Image 1 (cartoon, chains in turn cyan, orange):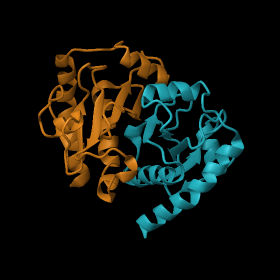
Image 2: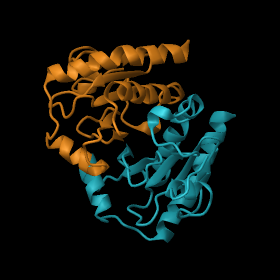
Image 3: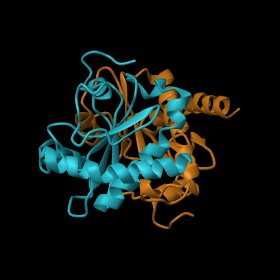
Length: 152
Length: 152
């Protein structure tokens, strides 16, 4: 169930492609790199595969299957980028479709979640689509392996 | 496995009590109201019941059992406060123990996640311990019922 005019739904229907393309998808969740303006290489986004605007309205299946792609996205990003800490946010309201940012907070960046967000949105760590696509390409096989191990 | 000098662990061992006391706990996760300074009545926090600092290091059991208390905390808060949107953040680094804020963004508050955080931390919606405890007391039976229905 996708909605017109929702950029998250546009990604789900492949009308818009995130840098590097889809990183992971299963029946309920999809992981992509953040879109332009690209705030940070490795800024990944997990979203449900149907248009749903309220966490309270996630189905039992979506709910039960959320933890694994979240943790494994963190694991794959950790393997690729070795961040000091992983931050997670579901706060975007210009896109109402539920989406969780997964943000690797690197060791040379302030250990302050609010400052990380402010500096991100100010473009402090902005990167090219090619750089983002490169991280996506490195995360993809690791995340897919972790997910297939967990399911298998 | 709790750690000395970790305020989240102090709450888990009941050395520190959040406003209104423990709202929900199971084998892996605990839900409490946010501590002083209380940024907002209904600012709830979900954390693992052992000291773990990295989402990548959550066990399979913790991972699989995370979605339900997250969604049901959002459901219970929605039933009590009727927010316009639910925000979720795992960003705190002064407390390294993983913890997810669940923040009801009310209709009269800007629909901008960064601004909500900034205004929260500036004390814009600060409330008394009694007010926070009152919300905790209203959320508790709803969340516990939702969790027991899901497990039963």
